[in-house]
Image 1 (cartoon, rainbow, N blue to C red):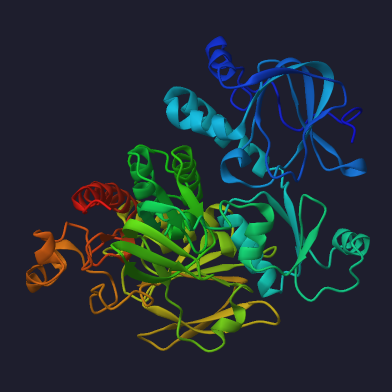
Image 2 (cartoon, rainbow, N blue to C red; image 1 turned 60 degrees about the horizontal axis):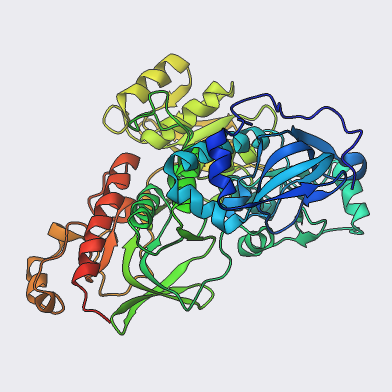
Length: 561
């Protein structure tokens, strides 16, 4: 592999936000944990597709950072003295996305990856400096559409599934329609004449044929693919939405051995929000995806084990520990558990809707964007904040948007700032209306909306229908010992029956349930799944932090083993 004669780098190595020079103090700190060694021209310091590599500080010489090979090679950046050569994957476990080739001989300070990760948690100022840098670099690289390549038809549900999984997990990826000449040429080069389903090209040069989400996650090294069965955790958090991530960060920062299990993507449903504008400390707002990414960085920094995409299917007790059973049959033992299960969106009760899911019908804005075609119109169904945010996001993109609301007003169900912006945007709001039919050839093309008062129907040309009409709790798998309300949400603290504290095991513990504790001691619930929750990001984060305080008290009272 050669890094010479490549075009000008696509990233600006003079940008101090992306490539800040390390100070003397930074170098001295890293030198205490690493070793200096010489590097020679043409040496490959790290290679695209590798499982990982150590953190490096370039002391002398220059290094080309290259993606691809041969005629397709692109020079990302030239690394120079005092540059820190490390990327996001040193934290997430994803495979290395580029190759580092020595252009001019010199020396490099090498810090083992495990020691570097530990430093980020111990040295708070340095850790913040590195995390901010990595976050900005990641955002810049995402815009280049590098990483894995998904080749599949825009009319194929599995293609949309993989694209949504990649988007929600912030994987560097690109999508090629299977009908494009470039995609057809790539398939021929792989020796694939005809594929039944999407193909995923990996950085290693290998490919997967219509993988499951779990198979793709394992192939690219996304977080943890296997569970350390011999390890007993202080806390297992089930669900990686805002509440679950907050709990994991606070717990791990306080020294608790913490694992998080997430069935889909870090960030939960909140990560699909186009913009969160009422979250304290972000006056300009931020996307749900950005909030999720920042929280994920914090969790990794403090040593949280993130297991995704895996689903919890059982919760039991054994020898004084809680046992969380995963969909693959593995079991995690924990002193305490936090249920941050979130909710799943409700579906419209109309004919043929399921036929168009992934083919124009979506339940999150990221998924909807992936299903848009040129000049498509958009129909958003719902009258709460999430629907208003989605409608505004597409209207701001210059698309024709119709917001369908069953009620006669959005004044009580939607925040005022959203109502004001919707009025100013000019997007059409259809009050007192419901979607009755969907139609299209291989992809959604028309949505029929009926006024519930007059019976008048209107056919809207739309390629995307986003359904945001409320949600249901994901609690069907929980044991009967976990008390639920009539709608299936988890009862906690004061909401639990008064007579509960007069029964085992509460009488043995000689205490009442803590504020966000469930009917089983040591199991807590936070966020949308908790009965009485406000279904907002900030309260969920607060509940996650509060739950950790009660977790610590519960663990302190447990008999020693």
